[in-house]
Length: 93
Image 1 (tube, rainbow, N blue to C red):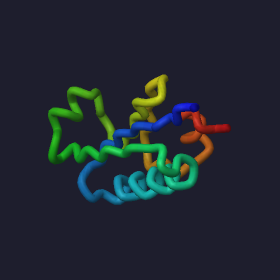
Image 2: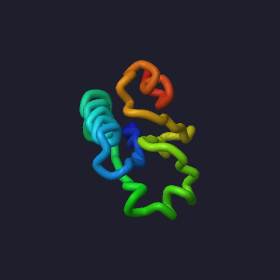
Image 3: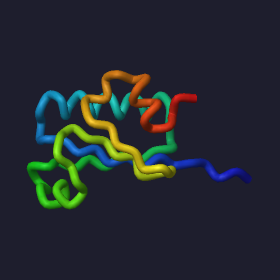
């Protein structure tokens, strides 16, 4: 039986800023459309966890990190340009 790949994402946002809200909505839509039942999304608010953002090297928000499957990749921005986002995340099938 083939094991299904689970995509693990961490999205760094800045509170309720408009760009952050757009990134959350765009990532949610992408995952529902391409990775239904095969994804985990963790949202980290840099205002609430500034040290974690610094430790993870986050200098701008919103920033998305894909941890699994390998390789790890990062995308900065609202994730509105779907084709470059899919390419960066390895989902451009």
